[in-house]
Amino acid sequence: MKAGCILLVLATSAALADDSLKPPNDEAWAWLGDINMMPEGGWIPLVWAASKDSIGFVSSKRYVREGSIVTFWMRWEYKPQSRYPSVLQRAQYDCTKAQYRSISQTSYTANNMGGGSPESLTQLGQWSPIAPGTMGETIMDFVCSINTKKK
Image (tube, rainbow, N blue to C red; front, side):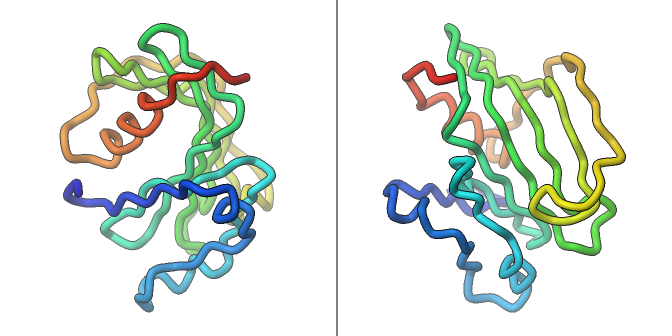
């Protein structure tokens, strides 16, 4: 297990069909009770921040692998008190060079991609290295294990 995050991968379709996230048995995660799993979007909770203030989801839908590059959707949910408690991101990870970049990002004023979206950015970002033992590496390991092209 990597320092700084807890890896959670749901493997069964029955688990993905559950529309409510079951937070860890810890009061610090109580805010997750209001987070919608959004199973229609194929969202899989993948990384939980050690700081207990955010969770990262990867969508099992609309990802594309071309050579060593995987393009996919990510969703970040933060405690409701955050400036932007929900962020939707289209990202690319290079599985060979262990680097990533953002393609687009939309920030929302409420959890579950709700409220307004006052900040939206669509441009190809710079490649950034992925450090070992980080949530980024956990995400890379997961998306790079996907071998099938999907759109």
